Length: 265
Length: 281
Image (cartoon, rainbow over all chains, first blue to last red; front, side):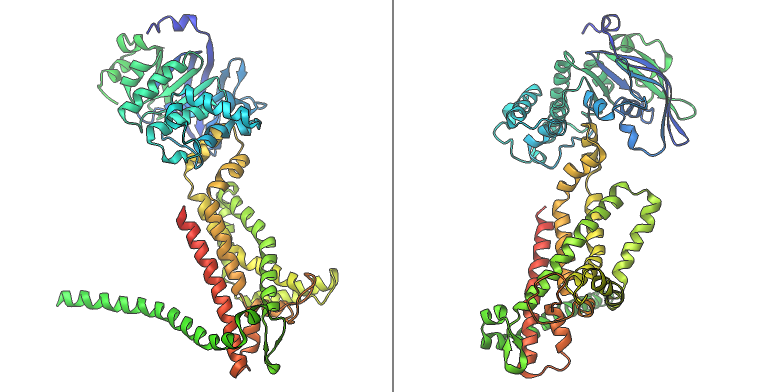
């Protein structure tokens, strides 16, 4: 993977500038600035409680439902300020999709799971929905396994296939960015490999940001890596960010080196 | 000795548990043995579809009362269900904690008010309102429906709210992440997912409406006739038993027990349906 060149050759998709995040009085993120590259896989790693998921959830405003949440600083998607007062949150969530830690198919058929998003964004024609369902299931390489049971409940699928279905569901609303919050941590190794292989393909077209507990996953599956750590006041901060190769071979910060060599975390 | 004590207390608990069950069995047997002979004599069809209830002349048709029960219950459903469902959605999804902590016990309190008090309030408040603003005698299907609608709220609200709250949190996250608004998420994901619980809640609530007696006696007028509008008085099956039990004897008394059988079967079917629906999921 020639990820050293991504830094210079890919344009910036999401830019954060000195972002602070508060839950009530508690500061969860302090002074986070990073440029996330388009059509690349960016991994956010770090010990538990360092604010990885909080940072990820800033990008599609999933934090909004938490009472007392406050965001300072700038987060730009292309040139659009995500936390602008006039931001169309529905449109933002269409552009920035999310896949969760635990596969969360809805209690409905496989078909309806994929069609759920497009339907609510105004696509009503049956033929078009059929096409969307097929295209997205093919995109995640699940089509052959489920094409004969599209009407069956998605909850009956094995975990690995459920997660692929959830990725297909996120893709069905045609996002530009896909956030994956430890999306492999509930899967067996084989399914994990499948999802990682899929991520690699998707990165041709989509900007992918993953949060992961597994350094191995970050090392083998990502182009860029951000290492985060908890500050002394328990707020999360970005320690080092750069091409994955460089972070894992020649980290600049002592703390990054300690973490990736397994001295803590 | 210790083992004996253990065994003994176990038996005592079993016995007490059985006694509760045996009361159900006794009541069932009692109602049926008392009521069946009359149904056999009059004939099931004549009893259920007979238009005339005149014990002194030996006519025992309860059709007007079946219509009475159905119309009052249906009215309660039409008024009560939307209020109850909206209220439970509000409590489960929108209400801030402080408001919820006031609402929830208040709704539980509704269940604790004796039915005679509902009836009394109905007679003094609802009935005159209907008479003054809508006409008719005031004692009517509408009055009964309003009172029953309020009485079934706690049952439907609490079960529905629990069902919605029991849905996995990640359903909601998934829908919000797809760009649905909070309301769209509720409407298109949470409510369909909670459907079986909500239907069961509604059936249990309506079961209560079918069986309610005291409050209904006080506000529906109790005339044994087929109603033409919702402003007409009716008599329900329960109120029929409640009103006439005091002085009925012989065949008349049997006929009231027979009415009880019909009620019993209706409520058994409703409860069984509710249980079946909740268990299926």
